[in-house]
View: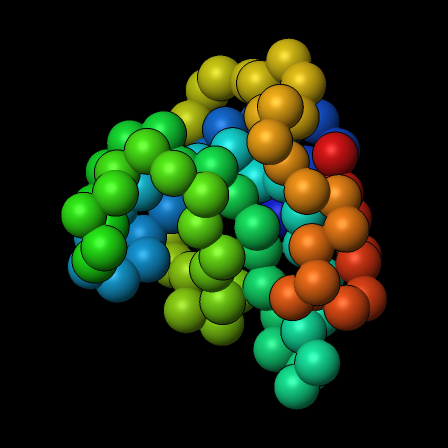
Length: 95
């Protein structure tokens, strides 16, 4: 899966997620308690319904479109990355 590879290789991605294009650093992929597949990512640029263009985001994978590598890498997890995020109950991939 493209998201798992991006997490393992720490690749920045450009994705389309309502309301538009975003640049993200994917940190964790997994399932929540209701079975939805989620991606915890740090958004560095682009559209945001909340108005926070640079912030942590929890994205539903079934609503992600046009996933492509941005061309950059991030060297390590963001310092405030929570490996024990209570929303993601079953982790598939994590930095």
